[in-house]
Amino acid sequence: MAQQANLEATTRTQTGKGAARSLRRQGKIPGVIYGHDRAAEPVVVDTSALKKMLVGISAGTTVFDVVVDGRPAVKALIRELQRDSVRPGEILHLDLYEVRADETVTLSIPIHLVGIPDGVRNFGGVLDHVLRELEIEVLPADIPEHVELDVTNLAIGHSLFVRDLKVEKAEILNDPDTPVCTVVAPRAEEAPAPVEEVAAPAEPELIRKPKPEGEGEGEAEPKA
Image (cartoon, rainbow, N blue to C red; front, side, top):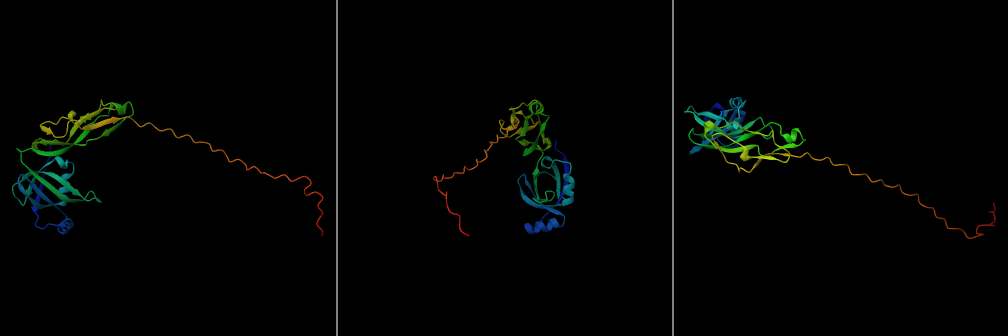
């Protein structure tokens, strides 16, 4: 089941890139909370508090108790954590989605493959994990952190599909015939192409024109 966490936020009055940069310099992260027919509300959270809370939990499937300006807590999920492309550890923006206990939500959960396939273990095949997240519809209290799929008996050339996955108390939204993983045969090593021996160039034949008989004979020695 999804883990629980708490997060405090305050209303954010200034918006725009300049204001967001200023907040980040102050150790704050700009964000927004929306959902359940509520207008999007700009908020700001403490950077260190958010990073500490995210340690050891699955951010995408964790239900938060969010308190904004001291008002009664609401349940929410993280819809997006925008991170710096150069420094992935730095969070630039946070999107929170309010949920209700009696209303289903749509989200994606990770697919974890369990075991070593027979085709890999005994025949040198390669496991190709095609689909890594599963989209489901579920009540907030029943959100799983991930779904597991046993691949131990998977042979070379065989696949497992979405229809092979089971998630308790949730409806799977992906096409049942979508492949999740397959074991492919190892690539055959290509033999090196034979090197053709290049014959050494033949010595050029020296052709001399034969002199007529008597030519050059009896010529007088040049005088000193």
